[in-house]
Image (cartoon, rainbow, N blue to C red; front, side, top):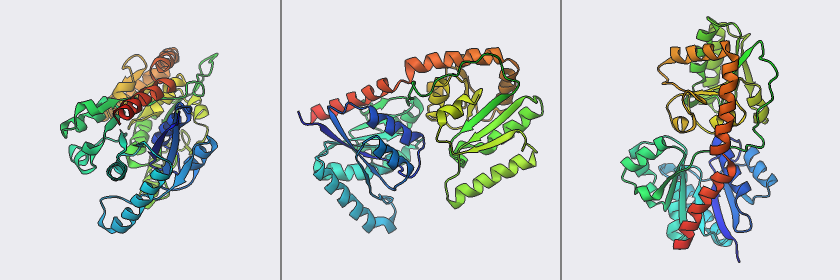
Length: 366
């Protein structure tokens, strides 16, 4: 029996963020006896090399923004190359991990009559849903109930939408046995240094905690992209650390390629956005404090594996950090419950099977 050929469009090839890691989990663990994956990255680099290391066929093809007038000719040329690539590999289904590439999938579908799947990892507005041709997709995967809402509000048929939470490799992200509580309590935030991740707010929280509890240390794990906007934001974060005189307790860890170890170094994860870092921290046996945005409320069991606290309630976040820092036994217990929950909820096998079920349904329709 011939393998079913699936074309994936990746958001990035030069770095690995949450979306790229989720795509890697999928293509590395999909049933390779039944499916043949082909990943298209817009640029080359760390993620593309990671895919090659996994023996996943990977092609570099820049896909210019579809809606910008200045990209009209380049967009058409890229779309034609994509069609040619899909023909060569006899692609039967196309799946984008970046919903901004939906128009390219729509173009492929028109030319080749193949099924399309769009993965929604961002919080959209109904206007964006309409702009980016979600109504032309055959299937839509949302990573949270919250990210499903604007799709429904924009009139997308709910039968097209599945909610599948992010996953984590439970064999890699594992708790470290703890023999005795440490004298320090380490709180981390993980992700690219950028406005959406809100590291500046994290520093504000650190300043408030430091004024009341001297044992807490803070890790900012991640680096800024090499763009003016992101470099400027990182500079502002560092200036804020200096302003509050937190240089001794706030550690800029930079980009880490050993995230399981980075998670094990923490006692608590704080996320002020959302994403797969929640699953990673819980799998590593760490409690998580998050805000009710994106997939956070779907992933954290409030009061059991962590806390979901509104972003405007910074003092409540501060108080919760201090409470856990002063009660390490409670923090460890919450982390143990987080690991157990991760084992039943965030496994890669479950995630891949749910996606494969969608593929099978679409391909059986033809």
